Image (cartoon, rainbow, N blue to C red; front, side, top):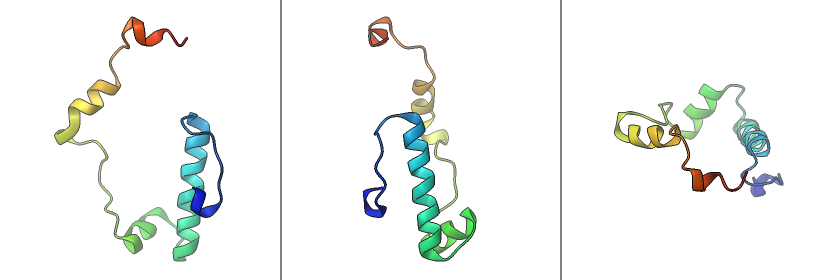
Length: 74
């Protein structure tokens, strides 16, 4: 994000999402493409699931209920 001059608040969901979108749009512009599949082809990034059976436990951990001591922030 800093490379393309985008400032944002780290770990704020909306800012993180908007910044990701801006980075992808800027990358597409720099590569001269108009779609995500074309961007992936030109950069060599494979289109595959981020979470698959190899790291399923990581996904499961993301969806479990927090422990009471983890809720003290709220």
